[in-house]
Amino acid sequence: MLRPTQQNMKIEFNYIRNRISEYRKDDLFDYCYQQLDRNKDKIFPIWYIFTLIKWTIIYGEKKYPPKRLTPEKFNKIYNAISKFNEEHISSFLKEKRADKAFQILYNQQFYLQKTVYKEIYATQLKLFSSIKGKYDIEKSFFEKTGFTILDFLYIQQIIWLYINIGGLKKEGLYFDGFFDTHFLNLVSEMTSRENVNCFINLLTLNPNNAEESISNFRHKINKVDLQTMEMSFFTMFPFAVWKNQIKLVHSSVFNHTINYYIYDFLKSQDENFTTDFGYRLEKYIELGLKEIQADYKTETQLKKILPANSNLTDFLIENENIFIESKATEIQALPSVNPTDELIYNALKTSLFKAYFEQLVPVSKSLRPDKENWGIIITYKELFWSHFTKLFEIGKDRYDVSQSFDHIPPQNVFIIDVYTWDKIIQIIKDKKATLLEILKKAKDNNSRPETSKQLFNMHLDDYDIGRLNLSYLSNEINRFNITK
Image (cartoon, helix red, strand yellow):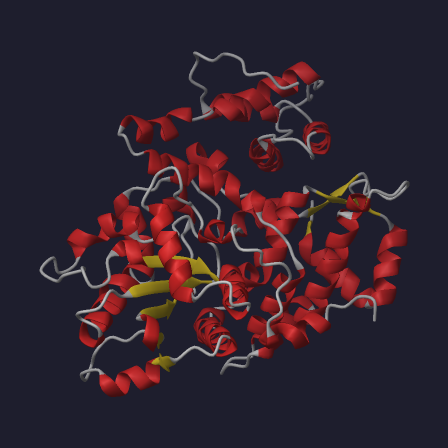
């Protein structure tokens, strides 16, 4: 059992680095993987293990001869990492900014709590492949990986089912953490040997260039004092070569890989990706509006009725006074772990802040000045904020303070990721609530600390959603039927 030690001592990074450098990398990896495997079904701070693996790759085995690693010595290193720079989070608590402290914890831990369901594959196939833009995202992915987006997602699904085979509760069916040759041959029969090789090569951390992979990770934190709070590079490399086999590092990072790998990969590899993806996200949102037969106006239609040179929103749902703007954005690494108001504003001023202060507010003022208006900012990724109140406090003094926000207050504006958007559309399609009723319920929940929700999808827990049955995803869902 890992036990904290030296609680009253401030841990310095040089101390941790020097201890790591004294041992063989393989010995440290072995203890790390043992901890991950031993605690895979328990609540355990695996993010510190990920940091230790990262620092082992970079700093391990620098001193010769290496020392013998014992459980006690390993625990000492682990505990030092878990106590490292604790004052960073506590500094926000001392300033009575618990929300800032929680944002750091969100970045450190919540990405490891992603869920997987069949429609997630279909949504990605729709966005990255089926919907066509001016730029061929499918072609770009194929040129960079050697296989198609469908092949990639299809193999992901098979791997996920195999990893979770123990859930069937049948004797002899379990996943031991490794992908053996027999299993990979079976997957090859369902797709092709070439596709399986491309998949494994893409998602496996190559020990020969592991440091380069870490260096190129787009969510990395350069300052070592903050690295225990960063998202792990294992989200891009959920597999590792260990004892001459392909090992799953941890199911939680693979769940994140399933949700966001294609976006993260192309965002880092293709400068043309982001603009075209923004167009596709807007088209995807419109498919949802058509699904529920909403009475809406598009950006093009709004442009015809607004004054010349006005800012625009993507959609207006007429009878409910709901303005919708899509933003293919995410928070960068540094403001996620050091969430000062200045860093957050600079990171989001052209996306979330612009959406509210420069689009939702003036457009709704022009079209519905005497109504209670509502706003939805739809993103691809789930963000720390699901309603605009905290962001409003950061941004309000940076814009024209003379303008009124009463017609669309920040409490009426929500930030919703695309997977949650699909669930909302299903609820409306099933006639369990209207979009306005869902937003009003969320606002009411957020008005009281005991019912406030961090993420918008938590507001949907009271609705029995079940399986998504959305016509705009039906073709894509059928393509993931592995029984055919």
